[in-house]
Length: 183
Image (cartoon, rainbow, N blue to C red; front, side):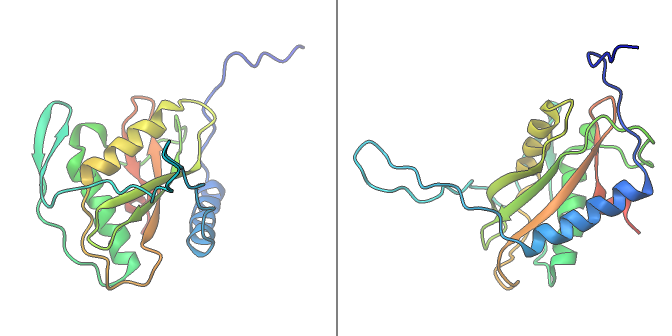
C-alpha cells in the first residue's frame, strides 16, 4: 500500500511527550541559544540587538477587544516568573486561550524562548521547536507573548533573563501555556 503523506493527522500527546517537553525546556534553560549574527547597516557600523519596547500595564488588543492588564509583580524566582508569565498570557489573550484539559490530539506544540530586558519587557523571542504542521501557530504564540508584556522587573533574578514556554494548540487554534497544565 503506497504511503499517502498528503493528509497529516495530529499526533497524540502522551505522558512521555509531556515529560520530554519538560526535559527539553529544562535543558534549554541551562544551555544558551546561539547568538544571532550582528547585522551591519549600509554605513558599516555594527548594530546592537533591538529591544521590543513594552509599556507597563497597557491595553492589549485581543480579538478586537482591549484588555487592561494589571501591573506585573516583581518575581522572586524564575519559577514564579514563569507562572506569572503564563497567567498574563491567558489574561491578555482571553479569546485565544482555553483552560480545560488539553485534548489527546493537539494541532501544534510550538516551544518558545522569551528573552527579557531587566524591566520585564520582551527583548527577543526565539523558536525552540517549530510544529511540523500548522506553522502559523508560531506567529500566534509570538503575538500573544507581546500582548502579555511586560512580565515584571526581573533585574534581581539571575541572568540570563529568559524563560521557555510550550504552547498547546487545539484544532480551533486556541492555546494553553503548558506551565499552567502542570501540577
